[in-house]
Image (tube, rainbow, N blue to C red):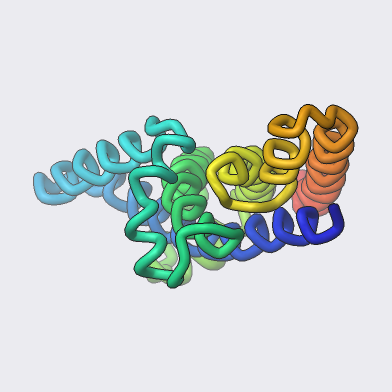
Length: 209
C-alpha cells in the first residue's frame, strides 16, 4: 500500500512538472497568436487549437494505449509508474495550456495598453503584467490539473501503470478484496483533498484584490 501511494505521488509530481512547463509555454503561444491579427498567426492559432482540442478530447484510457509503444521506447519499459508518465504529460499539457490561455485573456486590456504606451517589451509584459495579474487563475489551473492527473494515474494502474489505481484493480477488484479497494480509494481522496487545500491557500495568497 505504501509503495502504491509513493508511485501515485511520483507519477503525479514528475508529470506535473512537465505539464506546467509545456502547458504554460503552449498557453502563452496560443494567447500571443490569438492577439496577433496577421493571417499567419490566425492559421497557426487554428492549427494549435485543433491539435490541443484533439488531445484533450481523447479519453485517457485510450491515449495511454495509443502511446504504449512510444512510452516503452522513451522510458525503456511498458509497465510501472515510469511508463505512464509520457501519456500523462501528453493528456494533461493541452488541458493546462487552455487554462493558461484563458487566464491570460482575463487580464485587463487597459493594463496591457498602458504597458505598450510606456514602451514595455514583450518579455516585460509577460513577467511584469501577464503572470502577476493572472497568478490566481494560473495556480487554480495547476490545482485543477493536478487533481485531474491523480484521476489519470488511477486509470493508468488498470493497464500496468502501478500506483493506487493499480493496487485497487489488481489486489482489490481482481481478487474480490473490497477492503483493499476501499483503502486505496480513501488514500486517493485524501491526496486530492490535501492538494485542493494547498491550492486554495496559494490562490488566496496570490490574489491581491
